[in-house]
Length: 383
Image (cartoon, rainbow, N blue to C red; front, side, top):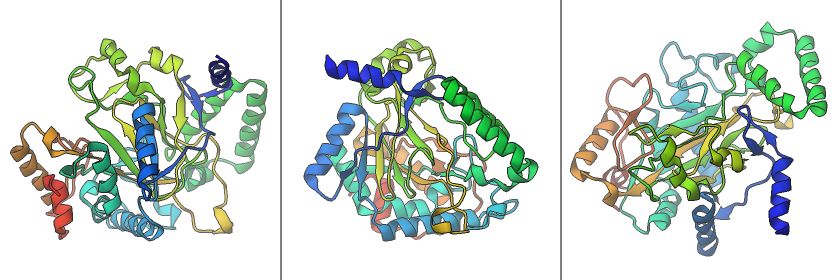
């Protein structure tokens, strides 16, 4: 009873996001190393119990740096009107993807060199193999996630007098001390005036309780930059996967994705938890878990670490998911379509055993990547 009372008190002291859901963005997430079998087993039990987990040491420092470099190469290789250059923030205004979510699926990002490098790091498949207890796994060909440093957006800084913006920022900060609920208004002002800042609070699930009531998909993110309250990132409603059946009453769609109404008990009685993570971590969540991504809750540092004048991104992630080939209803047809997706550089959804393309503008021309046998097997679903 004492623990329950303490949890209720903690929840009452939480702030709320822009739609009014209680949130905890300060708690540092527990991380479980994949390098130790027992620790990994503990992490996967955490996934089963809470609907999410953070597996560390999946990519080492060298692999993280290679992945970041390849993502930048992909961005810098986009054709006009894009002129993106790393370290040159004035070239970041014209940007691909869904800006409100910070997701890039356009121009074959899901079948880019960067994504194929990340998903073929052996530890990634090793973790999913432990989840599903098989190595005959299909890998998603989904895209990447990027948050630009909205607080350094040069267009916004040119448009707004710095003294006025400082006065507004300090006024909002002072008023939120007196009236805590006003911080929502302050965040909305920043979102509406700065197109680089993502929206967040799009609480949803990516699985249908009607056709898929059991665990049949575990989504994943490989983190390439630190994630905390100054960057934003993945948020989950802990334990909401255990209440998945309660979504039957609101499910109006035939697909896998549905937004959760703010009035639903899962949002009213639960709370959103920001997942803190380090580069090389694999963030996993059950597709039945209510989740969303979010911009930062705390204004990032105005100056990069170590007074480095070169600006950096706030978030850089690789979406990755693997499910058993045995889950596919028509394996032969699925494999043929997946091979075509690779050939024509299409980005697919996070459901490896169901075929669905994603993204707006597609790439032109055939893929020139020479896959290794290991990588090709991730398309075929064999070991």
